[in-house]
Amino acid sequence: MSRRTLALVAVSFVAIFYGANYTIAKDVMPHYIQPFGFIVLRVAGAFLLFWLISFFGPKEKIERKDFAQIGLASLFGVGINMLAFFEGLNLTTPISASVLMVTTPIMVLILAVIFLKEKIRFLKVLGVLIGLSGTLLIILYGTGNSATATNPTLGNFLIFVNATSYACYIIVVKKITQKYHPFTFIKWMYGIGFFFVLPFGISQFLEIQPGAIPIEGYLKIGYVIVFATFGTYILNIFAIRELKPTTVAVFIYLQPMLASIFAIGLGKDSLDMIKILATLLIFIGVYLVTKKPKVSH
Image (cartoon, rainbow, N blue to C red; front, side, top):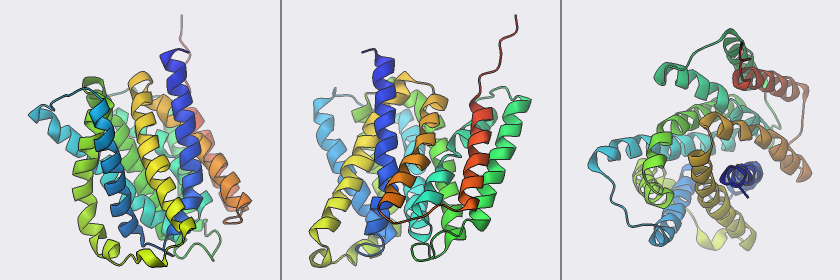
């Protein structure tokens, strides 16, 4: 199997792990743990796993000048990304959250045009406008299941902040992953990320009552740390090394379908016309943004 094929298999598993994560993480919050307290637990658990696995990688020293870039990757990939995602998911529904995450490729394009000076074409501009109209539709009108969505408008907006932050991470992280082994880079990213999330989540973390959490709750917390954090980041870093950032971002399209299957199958969410229309607009937008231009002879 070629390295490219392995990278494509890796990002497929990332989509599956994340797809289930919307429903599983929402089951944990706020019943057993508040969102920011959960993030402290998630980042600390993942950091320990990454530190342990780093012993199996090469012994590399990070150059001092690269810590600024790792800090930036940590801010976008761990700090803002996770805080916005968990608080947003806590307030909205799994399907709305997963649909909004699909805007990541659109945000990657916007950032690539601004920072990487990528050429902008009419179709891409049209795609951005159509995709963002779908995003606005779900943020403003995607109220979802009121039993599980306590403040869908704010929740949906925070998921959009999360998608934008993740897009920044994909842009920032590309160069640094070419220079260092993933295990070296990622343990530092999570180490720094822990200090980003600690001030926000320490009080909620201290409120956790271990005795009040059933076995099922611990298994769900374990899933979020081991599969949806540790597993996805390892697989993603490998994929980013082998594939273009836009190709990695494309696999996020699988998440709404997978998240919907998990959420509807477990009775945690339902589809309505707003979600379907918003999904269509976002997918059309993403298709136009990622469509390769015809080469003229």
